Image (cartoon, rainbow over all chains, first blue to last red; front, side):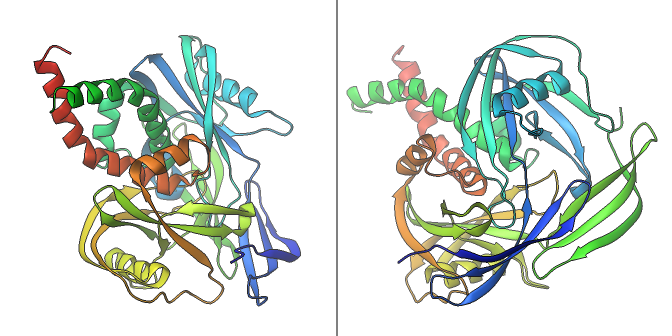
Amino acid sequence: MSLVETAIQMRVVYQGELLTIRKDSVSLPDASKATREYVVHPGACVVIPQIRPGLYVFERQFRYPLRQVFIEFPAGKLDKQESALVCAQRELKEETGYSAENWLHLGVMHNCIGYSNEKIEIFLASDLRPGNQALDSGEFLELFEMSLDEAEDAVRKGLLTDAKTITCLFWLRMIEGRHEAKIGSLADQIGR
Amino acid sequence: MSLVETAIQMRVVYQGELLTIRKDSVSLPDASKATREYVVHPGACVVIPQIRPGLYVFERQFRYPLRQVFIEFPAGKLDKQESALVCAQRELKEETGYSAENWLHLGVMHNCIGYSNEKIEIFLASDLRPGNQALDSGEFLELFEMSLDEAEDAVRKGLLTDAKTITCLFWLRMIEGRHEAKIGSLADQIGR
């Protein structure tokens, strides 16, 4: 079965200061027609700032749509013509003051596939050097450090609910997992 | 430092078929003013359908905003006056045909805190009984099963990038983690 939907007509129905909304007519797999409304997004990056393996820099930031302070990794939207890596380096510096010697691209996530075309590139930044923050006008946040175990505990307790940050934690566990696998095989050898 | 932003004026600037957009004037922590535009969302649920511990039901679904087929857990928006659990039971049945004997609420995630107030309730559904799908008009999807290790491998390879689904995988690893901890302590006892 083909799952693909094809655009028949596309138009911008709302152009705001931050958000652009498109409403397209589409042809469905069974040839019937439907409407698809969604946010047109420039793309974004999220940065995992590693103090040392197992210890990371997090932010506390008020997010107005939910009227709530969230625990997050630094993140931001791509400027026009900006590459994901340059965006990641800029956002890390602006929001935390840190610059990083080593940058590793871990992967990509899509955080809102139902009604946005946002794509977030995930970077691990290590060998950090402290410096001065340069927050955007209207941007306020607090920095703090947590271990991966502390972050997992915060998820378990419902204190860390941001999906992009939890997705980063999953990536960190995957990277760490290689070490844990060794312990597993050792236990296998001795018959558990 | 207070991080809180306070609403001065709120208004709906776009009311579409699917999306409602609000544009509020807010007062920032330093008493300056700014504009916040965001999607007003009714809330959603995501269901992890467990065939048996370690084996889960996934969907392949075309998501028009990104013109791409995604691997996801079943999910959907709350109907008016609908509780999250009833929504989860309805979506599981409609999208997969399964009904579940056991429902466990794992937690909450926020997938798009920058420009949406969407909140997703996470449920683990087990003791599944197969039945008939009842897809919404215009909804097309394929079902398949993967182990948690296969899903992790799909994330690593960039084949599974949906943040809500990866957040669910993180929750599954946390639940599983208790067993792995035992193996860890065993390895500790024998001096690794």
